[in-house]
Each structure stands twice: as structure tokens, then as C-alpha cells.
Length: 327
Length: 290
Image (cartoon, each protein chain N blue to C red):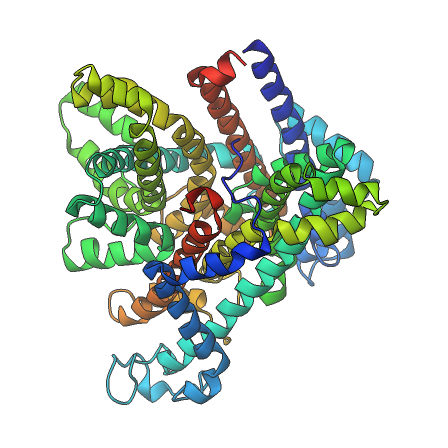
């Protein structure tokens, strides 16, 4: 197991170095002079030169990359050109909203996906199974942005049940004030704002997890050791909970981990539709302003998050899978 | 990370059986029917479209579906059905080119990594891991953001984000195929590495790649629509389902019909490719064969 952990850590380190290299290369993909693209045709030569120097673009490439790595190692990503603030601070301000949305979507996906997947596997080809799998099949093919628009149309504009855009108080702050002052209004408001974006964002992963859990559990339920457990007279709940599900969940854990990247990407679309003040909206704003250091920073941070979550999932996978643990 | 579960080797004599199995899969046939409709719509758009999709007539703007305009008109009075038909061309083109480019890069990388191994494999597969660390849409947005919007840059961006899937699958298949007797025989006869890869390994690795290509078409179409929805993909006045949804978003309260049909078109198309992909996997996967 120790060897496995060491291997995964080394692998992540190499990937992170590659991520930094690719993010660094982004700015050099610009057709023409990136500084001219950023400042526009009206910029004076002095302004162009100043920005070129500020971004280090007047240095040889290897020096630029070394400086970039050095800055990253000390936790800096440069300054936003148009907002004149450190990129890390701008991202740090918006990240909690994106994390809240992504985690909520993930929780929805795991709870609903797991529940429907297990019920479908226990009662295969039943009415529930057929309906759930039809919904899951549709969920996988449904574009996030269209589902969000349909959600707004139905639940906000037609029925008026939920707000169509914006974020309430941060969920944990609202929960805290409820506990402290006994007034749940902020928490309810935060939940109502979160509901549509999180359900929209989580739909794809819910469908995927549901399909995967169903097929994995069906396969496990046909194994000899499950038949033995049945022959011993064990209760179905015990067979599923103790024997079948833990084994069926091993491949599911990997997929759940991989979904984090999909969710973070999807969050950009969900944030745009629901005017959710997260990193995704900041990314689009920075693209419109051609604020490349900010674009670079956001792309880097999302890749770092995905890499680190993949590492955690891999380690978790090692911990729950005996073949890896004792391999 | 777990390798995708794929078919590994489908001899030619089994191709007929696979086709028969595909034809008996009703979901896959439904998927093929959807794709056929899309292809016909895309090819014959100039003949099928009742109006010119670019003609602006402000007097008839935002008309709901009716006899004159079956699916209504947009904010500039353009016929939505006509734009939808022309949008099918963009979607299909993006799907085909993305799959071709990503497949070419990915399969070449996967063949080399799987067959040559060693440093080649280490470098290529680490590169795959690096690309996989970026959420697909984030990397595509970033590439289009620095290269500028437009069809060509969308295609470049999508090829660069999707090649990794083909590389991983091609490598995992080649790892098995390179130990087959016919590969050893070719090697013994003095065939070069490139000849073995192209003439012997590639044809036998084609089955799982076909499955991936079908699923990849759907993914590419959604990704293009997402980029266009964000204003980073196909630019006006060209019709694209994603950019039509972008316009529809602004009129959700007063003219929701603007958003219904383009979204439905994307959904049904992706569903079609997914159903065909699932059907192909079932038909080509030897482990499921009875």
C-alpha cells in the first residue's frame, strides 16, 4: 500500500508539472502578439512594452517558464490586468461559490444516483427500473445549459417556486446564523437559490452514477458469494449492504472522482445560466476582457483541483480495494 | 484511473454477426434513424429550408410557431426551422471533424505508446494524464479564448481536448494485440514497427474505436453547442444550435419557443449517437456474445 501511495504522489507531481507547462503555453497560443491582443489596437508602444515586461514576455521562453514555476511555487499567479488585483485573491473570492455549487451537485448525484441504481438493480426490468433507466439515458444526453433553461422556464417563470438567478447567503453561513439566532430564513433562501443550479449541474452525473451502480450491482448480485449468502439465509438488506454494494461501489468510486472534473466544467455553464457568482462567471468575464493572466490562473486552479481530487480518489480506491491494498 | 472497458479483438468473420446483432437492437436502430434524419437535414438543408436562414425581416420578429413559420421566428425575424436545418450542418461537421482529428492524434499516440512502450509510452501517457487533468469544457474555452472564436478554432480546441480518450483506448487494445501470434509472426518476418502498427494492429483495434467515435460525435456536438452558447463558438449570423440557444436565453420569459427546438435538436442528436454507441458496444463486445 505504501508503494502504491508513493507511486500516486509521484504521478500527481509529474501531472502537476505538465499542467503548469500547458497553462503557461496557453498565452503563447494567441495568434499574433498577445500583448497587442490584450490591450487592443489603441495601446501606445510604451503601454505595450510595459505589459510585455510585466508579464515577462520579453524574456526567453525557458526563463519565462522558470519564473512562472517560481511564482506558482510561492503561491502567486500574477495580477489581473483589468482588475489590478492579484489573480489568487480574485479566484479565492469566487471559489467558495463554485465549490458550494459543485459539492451540492455531487451530493445530489451520489444520493439520487446511488438510490435509483440500487433499486433498479434489485428490481431489474420492473416499471421503476425501466422508468429510471429511461430518465438516466435522457440525462446523459441532455446538455446542461438547455436543462438549466428548461428548469428556469418551469420552476421559476411558470410555477414561481424557485428564483431563476443569483445566490443567497453562503450556505454554511446561513446554516450558522440559523443555529445561532434560530431564524432559518437565510438558510431556506440560500437553499432555494442553490436548488435549480445544483439539480441542473448534477443531472448528468446522477444519470451516469445510476446506470453504473445498476450494472455493477447486477453483476455482483450474480456472483457465487452472494448466492452463498442467500443460501445461508441472510436477509436481502444485509446481503446488499454488507456483501454486494461495497464490491459494486469499487468501480463507482473512480467514476465519481472523474465526475468532479465534469462538474467543475459544467459549473461554468450553470453559473452563466443562473448568474451564480463563481469562478466560471469570472472566467467568462476575463475572456471577454482578454485578461489572460486571470484566464491562465482560473484554468490552472481548476486543473489543480481536479488533479488533487483524482489523487484522493486513487488513494481511496487503494484503501477500499483489497487487490490494490495487498497488491 | 481505470481503463475503459472495451472490446479487444473482432476477427473479420464476426463482423456479419455483429451487424446482425446491431440490427436486432431496437435502441441502436432508433439511434441510427435519428442520425440518418440529421444527415439528410444537413445535406439537403438548402432544399428543405422554407426560408433563407440569414434573411432579416424585423416586421416578423419573435413570431410564435404558426402556419407561415412552423417553428416561429427569432429576434431578427429569421425562420427558426431554416436556421435549425442549417445548424444541423454545423453540428454534423463539428462532430465528424472533431472525431477525425482527435481520433487521428489519439490513435497514432496510442499505437506508438502501446507498441513501442518504454520512453514513448511514458511520455505519451503522461501527456494524456496532463490533458485529462483539465475539465473538457474549461480547456476548450481556454484554447478558444486565446485563439479567438470561430469554427476553425472550435475544431482545434475540441480535437485537443478529446484525443486523450482515443489514445488511452488504442493503447490498452494494442497492449493485448502486440502479444498475439500474428504480431509475433510479422515481427519475425522482419516487418517494420510502423508496418506492424498500421497493417496489423490498427485494423484489429478498430472495433472499440468505432464505439468511441459514435459516442465522441455526441460529445463533440454538445461541446460545440456549449462554446457557441457562451458566445465563443460559431459566430453570428451563421446558424448553430448553441448560438440559437444563446439568443433564446435572452427571451426566455417572452419567447420561450426560441429555446425549445434548438435544445431539443441537440438532445435528440446526442441521444441518437449515444444509443448507436451503446448498441455498437454490445454488438462488438465479445464478452456479451452468446
